[in-house]
Length: 227
Image (cartoon, rainbow, N blue to C red):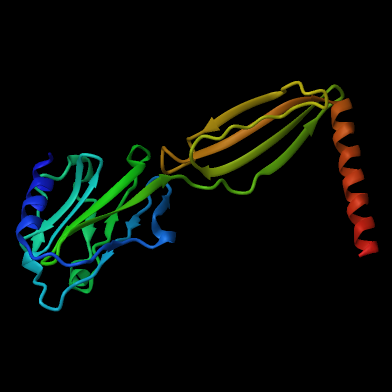
């Protein structure tokens, strides 16, 4: 058993037992953050009026990895994983109000997964978990059309998203006409991806697209007149 968890367990066996719990509201059990963002893992607990800060143990873990520890009234980071060094903090002035939430800065893609908060107070030991998902929505796509007598190039671009997307363009008969390029040079964060996708189309296929758009627009206009 992890040494810190063993200490928490041992203390819980000698403290008076009462019914209490670590609570994480339903809408905060999943945290979504983009690479480089700050994520807040929410965890609250019931505090007895006689609770002393020095008798409280808070330990956040990602699997077996120690993310942040607090006991004897202060942060105890000797066992903290080096990958989380200088990136975590508790809201210490709110702990005796029942707030054991953790702030994690500069979120990385490989840090995705479940984080568990273990709390031992003068009542009992309890725990609660939060799942971190590292993701970022892409901006609205932009289309650019270039054509000559024989070919048409339609370029779709979208920026600032994560993870890497799957994009496909298909002709009416289903043939894939996709070429996709991920452009990282314009992003401050190497994990954030800018997408450039372009199918190479014939003039005949462009005519099909224009006809399809015309039908859709006409249908929308008719619906508007009838409503």
